[in-house]
Image (tube, rainbow, N blue to C red; front, side, top):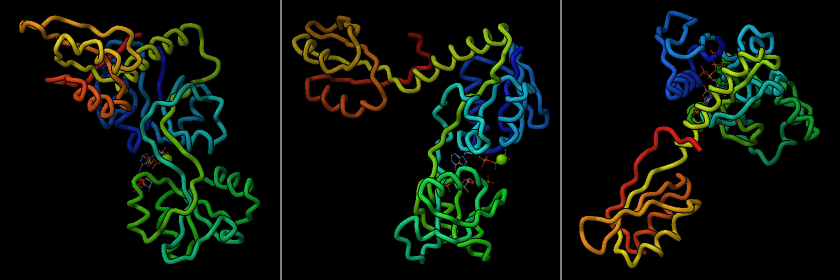
Length: 283
Ligand SMILES: Nc1ncnc2c1ncn2[C@@H]1O[C@H](COP(=O)(O)OP(=O)(O)OP(=O)(O)O)[C@@H](O)[C@H]1O
Ligand SMILES: O=P(O)(O)OC[C@H]1O[C@H](OP(=O)(O)OP(=O)(O)O)[C@H](O)[C@@H]1O
Ligand SMILES: [Mg+2]
């Protein structure tokens, strides 16, 4: 049995649970139970505060975990990282009151900065030769300038709406983060084998998230031109349509190239283009 620690409630919880479910791992989810066992995979889930997850994984209380890279690096536990998971993307940024004249980082020399990430902030300031007073608080950081607690803040930003609502503007990006899978460094062979199985499933889910299945119809004389437009795929499926002189082409395209390709395909004579999500993709 492998033990995974995930955040009980917060910005990582929903996506962490979704990933586990998309891997075909079932469990009974109750908001009151802080430990559950999967009914069809050797996995036990522990629901914890995110800040505690790296420590528990390092100590072997949990075998693996999902946590923000910002927390992992803040706690000096980068060595536990297995791989990024592509969700809970955000940045750690410095912000000042919107009416401040800010030109560069030297403006923060000697200032008070409130943050929940003192280590990440300290190394950012050190690298730039700026000395400031770091005031560590555990939450509601954006309130600090308006109550006279600090001149600036360093906190998580995603859409930027919390900053705007609190009369602040983002002035420096300190760290880019996303959710990361972490693991204890001395797993037994049995646990390592379960982790490999889980990683195999995670990769299939991740590959599918980036890919779309595309189906289109084209006159036979356009098929060769259209095949050349489909990137990265050696050989798309070509099937004859019931209508004489027409074919149906099936292929997989990357989400990032999607709109670009769709336009080119249409210009090349493709019709009835269907784009369908893919649930799992095994190489
Ligand atoms: N607005 C956001 N958008 C995307 N990701 C975010 C956002 N805010 C935080 N995160 C990421 O999610 C992680 C957890 O954020 P959250 O705000 O839920 O933490 P918390 O309040 O410390 O939770 P806990 O109660 O577990 O200690 C952060 O460390 C960061 O990596
Ligand atoms: O740029 P935005 O999209 O506004 O997101 C940023 C906010 O999100 C996080 O807080 P959260 O809402 O998770 O609450 P918390 O402070 O209680 O953790 C973070 O601490 C910021 O305050
Ligand atoms: Mg926390």
